Image (tube, rainbow, N blue to C red; front, side, top):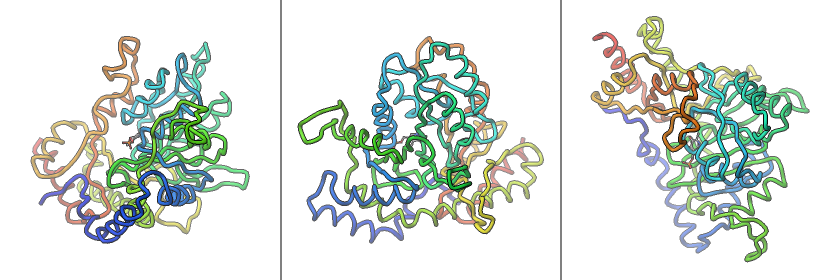
Amino acid sequence: MKVPLLDLQAQLAYLKDELTTAVIRVLESTRYIQGPEVEALEKEVAEYSGVAHGIGVSSGTDALLASLMALGIGNGDKVLTTPYSFFATMGVVLRVGARPVFADIDPVTYNIDPKKMIEVLEADEDRRIRAIIPVHLYGQCADMKAIMAIAEQFQLPVIEDAAQAIGAEYPLATAQGMKNLRAGSMGLCGCFSFFPSKNLGGIGDGGMVVSKDHEFAQRVNLLRNHGAHPKYYHSLVGGNFRLDPIQAAALRVKLPYLDGWHAKRVDNAQRYDRLFHQAGLVEQGHVEPPTAVYRSLDSTSAASHYHIYNQYVIRVSDRDALRDWLLANDIGCEIYYPVALHQQKCLGPDYHGISLPEAEKAAAQTLALPIYPELTTEMQEYVVSTIAGFFAKK
Ligand SMILES: *Cc1c(COP(=O)(O)O)cnc(C)c1O
């Protein structure tokens, strides 16, 4: 049996007609820059996320970049973030001329550890940390209750890197009492990616900044179009960060399916969990399945979306050999991410000698398995029995 890490053909099989219609609609409209499809998607995603504003941009990376630019972060500034994420999270900090500083991760969720954040903020004697970028890794929100309290204490804006977590929920106290809030709606802004492998993926690159803050959203809106308003009058220096209307039209087809896809990913994750236990792999200490730590406030909503499983990531002891074994058995898998950010070569000597043991351990021990919505029970059983076979032969 062949089990790919992600099978977009399986999705295309039932979306092809709708997507074709949407793409042709843009083609025939001749509105190839901005326009009604982009505006409609912005409204729909903002509403879905529970915020007032959405600004479509060219990628998740540019969503983060434009957010930092909108805050005026640059030379001499520092940004506090996680050492365990996709490179873009730190790349944007470096690109605006600022320095990333890292707080180690929680070993259970792989998200930034608030206790470590406080240590880093208290050690920042020259007070150059200007913003916090938590990442909701693999589809589970970071500990936003603690993070927002820290942000308030240190008076810092929070840019949520929600590239992997659109629609993920988190229970947070609001003026109206406890609420299930969605990724991207808790900090100053949230940044989504529509890279094809994300839960809401386009047919190319795309991204969005969502925010409840009107003034901030206005700045991002200006920055994505060279800071121009009106046309040819530039109050800010921005870039071309615009979202392609073909992407917007395709994403509008997919958005109504998103909650159903989340539910299937949650089902698949729970099935893997059961299968790993049944095979004795958890008890024997070979496989540590991911942990969804937050629970729905609403006890009637059984299928909680507190983890939307953009990736289903296990921790294993002999990771590299297991990966080779799975690939040899036609099972797609991937290491997200093999090198912690503070150990990336591009950072230079200032970062040598920094030790963030939990991030380093995660980079050495984790492996993502196929989890896409169309994955079948038989495929999952094959994945787990193949992993059991690996540990049995050792
Ligand atoms: C995918 C991703 C990004 C970047 O998104 P692109 O659309 O590929 O630019 C940023 N941060 C995280 C955590 C991601 O997973």
